[in-house]
Amino acid sequence: MPSRRQILGVTGALLGAPRLAGAQNAASRTLRFVPQADLTVLDPVFNTATVTLAHGFMVFDTLYGLDADYNVQPQMVEGHVVEDDGRTWTLTLREGLRFHDGEPVRGRDCVASIRRWGARDMFGAELIAAIDELSAPTDRTIRFRLKRPFPLLPRALGKVTAAMPAMMPERLANTDPSRAVTEMTGSGPFRFNTAERVSGVRVVYDRFDGYVPRQGGTASRSAGPKIAHLDRIEWHILPDPATAAAALQQNEVDWLEYAPNDLLPLLRRARNVTVKVTEDSSISVLRFNHLTPPFNNPAIRRAMLGALDQSQFMTAAFSEDRSLWRTDVGAFLPNTPMANDAGIDVLRGPRDMDRVKRDLAAAGYKGEKVLVLQPMDLAFLKAMSEVAVDMFRQAGMNAEAFAADWGTIVQRRASREPPDRGGWNAFISGFSAAGLLDPVANLGLRANGDRAWFGWPNSPALEQSRQDWMAAPDTAAQQAVARQIQTQFWQDLPYLPLGEYFRVIAHQRNLVDIPVGLSTFTGVRRV
View: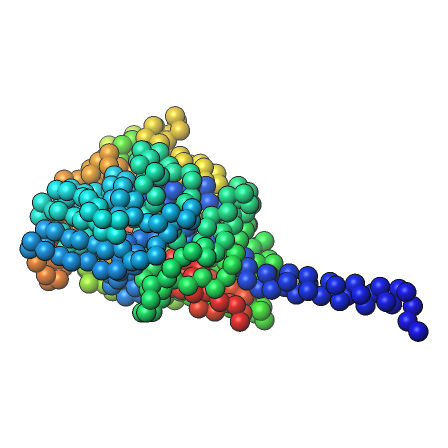
């Protein structure tokens, strides 16, 4: 006859089994992700950080999407009608779209969202400038009456680069564009879990059961049906690469957005881990502050071309494995229609630091301090920042680093004050492949002064060429203008291109269907 302890043990096991099974099932439907940095700013219209953009595509949705081949596809819209020789566009929203608060997505929400986004985004500003009237005739329609044809309208509203053309409730979209929205009520496939967010530690998202994916088609980048197979997404903030890699090996996390290059051999040997070189690439850039000496002087900026060795930056950040990166990078993404070799010879051949020093002296460099913002919690940016400081010093410049976490760097780079009053002279960042296909999408090429991206370059010639490209009648004409743009780029030098790299991710082997492009979580499954 069984003892009382045995009976209680069996009973406890039977009672505990459903709970254990439930816990295991919940764990299987939770994905633990390690982003490249902490999420410090939530508003994807207000902020251009990649981590904010990835967050934005979870919580919000866009009227159009881009597929893996960068073709524009309807997303929130059912379709559109173009009339009056391209001067009137009527967009119709899909049925059943709802925000996370249960309210339907209405045309007037989209109108307010487009206006706010257009006040923050370079591409959006071009669209707003072409609008004569923007209205919502019904709850499901949005009408653009244009001063002139704007055939790039769907591409503008479907861009996958910052700032995100996110559709928000009208009450949030009416927020002053100069202030960040803090309430995260979107219509995307995941809800932002405000209660469980711990700054510097964790960000949590829950599947939005009211999300209605597109019917038909193939999920691809931000286009097609966005189906959330997972109930919960946890972002675990682990700034130390070794700690993140160990957590992946020990099955404490599921996916590293950036696998540390020096630990790739170790991760490849782990039986439970898949290491993958993604198809999408990014261009690293060294951004100058054009408002403050010494880089407010274009001749000093140009002198640094003689010091630039793209391979040094790429090797420091992404190892000596040249399959992970390439050099000879100009203003556009290599091997795409607008890429060209205009002026590229300036990057080739041996670097002559003595000549650079002479060029700097001739340009009027007087020993001003060069302060380089260096994020300590992003290994690849940290490494490239060290190379930048060394490059400036070898050229005879008085360079030093300001070391801080990425969130602090993001805040400081917005300052237009001199370095000794909280400003800066240079920082390292990057642009995704989608942002370098043409001069309209390229955030770093905008040279409209106070309205430009951080660094605030001012070049009427670049701005005019951008308009010429938009007015070009065909691809051949666009390519000719793109060549002119790259020629002018080397003269004005809004930034130094540091090379192209391919992101390497690492994840648990039981994760499948990780999408191409920005780190998004629809379509991802656990098997």
